[in-house]
Amino acid sequence: MTQESVLEALKNVIYPGFTKDIVTFGFIKEVKIEANSVAVVVDITSSAVEVRDELVKSIDIELRKIGATDIKVAINQPKAPRQASNSVSGKNIAPQIKNFVMVSSGKGGVGKSTTSVNIAIAMAMQGKKVGLLDADIYGPNIPRMMGVNEQKPEIMGNKVLPLKAYGVEVMSMGSLMESGQSLIWRGSMIMKAIEQFLRDILWSELDVLVIDMPPGTGDAQLTLAQSVPVTAGITVTTPQEVSLDDSRRSLDMFKKLHIPTAGVIENMSGFICPECNTESDIFGMGTSTVMAKEYDTTLLAQIPIEPAIRIGGDTGMPIVYHKADSITAKRYHECASKLIAFMDEVNESGGASNAQIQPTTPPGVSACSTPQPAPKKESAESCGTGCGCH
Image (cartoon, rainbow, N blue to C red; front, side, top):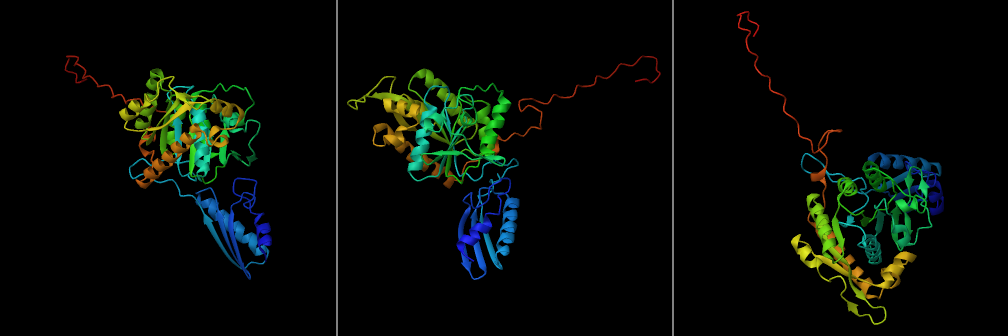
């Protein structure tokens, strides 16, 4: 037996739930052969015991066909979702991902998607395995910003493979529909889409998944927080007071959903002249610092207005990658480093948990409803005849 013959045999082992084999998926990490003994190490993305058992059985069958008699199979799986100690357990429908970062804002148009793109790429450039999920279902801009707007993801069985750009795995509703197509969906459909993006996308074993949320504090945010334990919440704002008013609502949401708050990113914080690199105050630099202190968090970065940011977003050439020496790119990298350190602190102190925000009401009953007491029965008066009717 040779390495090649073993790998050829393992191509007959189809990953459960898919049409692709474990070799093509790249799940085979190590093969050792000694006479008729074969040891195989396999890394998979599922934490399910039944998936592991089925693979061990199939691998054993295929290797015996080529003459192996002593077979050892080691299956490496992500840890199953951690169970909370209280009566309601936490939930994690994407356990192969170590950390989830929710990038939020109280209102649209503050540069949340641009921030998500550049932070995700910065973390990938710093050696992390990163994914980027565009959860802004109604306004998906991530594909254009990442330069994958002309690509369509590959369907594997009942799963979807994410696209990849700049070392980051990418998925967006914009990659699944035609350009300019509108989605006129109710909140329940948005909630289902968020869950499917987490469960039915074949994400790798990522260090972090950056999630670009729609503006506001509604169904999408609550669904995400209840579906996976969010390690860090980031609020993106501009310096104007009208933006800060809405950003406070975003920070308040993190508190109510028990999401650890990594900090605030002040976008459009000053203007950098492309000719002389001079930074000028336009909208009021530094106003986010006071807000951050109000919510016991920090100002992660002040990102200026710079023409290269807009050009990079329009052309799929993000500034953090294509102009890595620029002032803005360096600030994104500093922000990414702070975020990585924050996630490490959260995990060292026990990790994130969404057990406290899991629904506890029966299906079909509103969590806001209050049981009504049964009406009291009034004692009837006697007819006065002495007949004993009451």
